[in-house]
Image: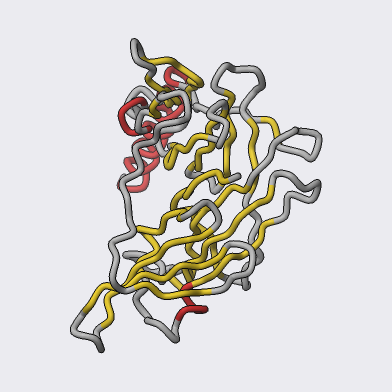
Amino acid sequence: MTNRRLLIISVAILITTTIIVAVFGIVPLPNYEDLSSKNNFDGKLIYYIEIQSVNIIPPAPDIINSCIFYIDLSTDLLQEEKIMCSSDLYDFSYDINFYDAQIYDGNKILLSYWDNQADNKRKNLIVDIESKEISEETNKNLFAENNRMNVYGEKLIDPWETSDYNSRVIGVYYADRIKNIEVFSSRAPSNYYFESFHWSPDGNNIIAGDSENNLIIFSKDKSFNPLRIKINTNLQDGDRLELVQVLGWTN
């Protein structure tokens, strides 16, 4: 009798699930074209990733390393190049704040940390993107708020303000002096999202990261379909990568 009841319950659950899927449907990921060397862009895309262990037991994976990479769009290879990782900075501190990292002076990365051996004084590290040379600055507050504004005075709208995850709609918008303008809108799974919008140096394109560890380039005037760059940083077996944020698009 018990087995029969369990069978009936299982069949009922299966039928209910099938009906829900049939009514509401499975929303696929947005469709993008892959960026290739045929696309004509200049500059570097700078982004911050974490390399994590794959923990079977909750609550969360261990962060093995934090790294900042770039992709040079002006070359045909479109290869990922490491600028630095937290493991490269252990001579300065084991607690470098990568979440506040900024592009500084066009071709450098600015990082901060608190020096526990110097009366907990805040210090800044400046890393040259090309040479990887590291310098230290202790006396200035070099960090500035990013206002997401381009050379035309147009301002990117935060992705959390333009996406409705309950209705599974995501979007990319910016504001000119009069109105909000849609760049892209699509249905998407409820766990899919954009973050870290930044303008290209010429103010005509937008770079974003997504929850699938991709970089997406959008055209402000929709002159091309969104282009995707898959991040393929080499990892050790058992590790995984998470794109945390895009720092920007430099010249």
